[in-house]
Length: 217
Image 1 (cartoon, rainbow, N blue to C red):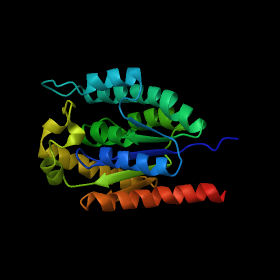
Image 2: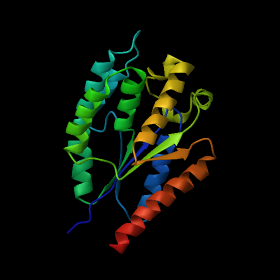
Image 3: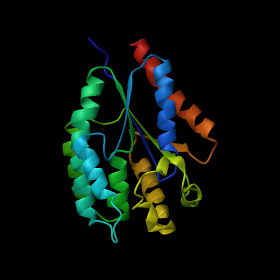
Image 4: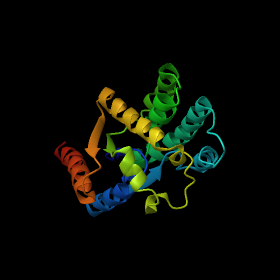
């Protein structure tokens, strides 16, 4: 019987370094002989990438928040059914840049989509599909640091529709992420203000523990 793969998600406000850290984690796992798939949310599938382009298209006003949330979860349903489940079931570890906390923060905490609606969507698309991450890490940086890092390589080629909303918007995002982390036991907060190598050390220590646990079973 094939040992199931693990589902790992990195979150945080823009420029927190999650994309770079995912690349480092992929290399770390590959060195351990563990096959990985790197993906992102929204996206990761053909329909998901089309939804991503629609959501992040540069426009005068943000899309109505409930419409955003429904589109994100439509992409998430495809992501879970086409990327997460098939890969973990064959022993591949899935590393994702963002997942449902982004929706809870961007569309819920900041833009006002109700908890009831988001919980219902979460239940149907995450819980019922059995796609809760095995490790959910939030890389925390200040809104000011996020602005200072604008223009980094992680953002090249992206339509930065959310990033253009200003400092107050990013401060609300950070507050939302920290609020969600306090209310969810499965979220680990990592200080993203420290050196990149130290962030990586903390993440690899967490994942190393997961690997050791598997080997001891």
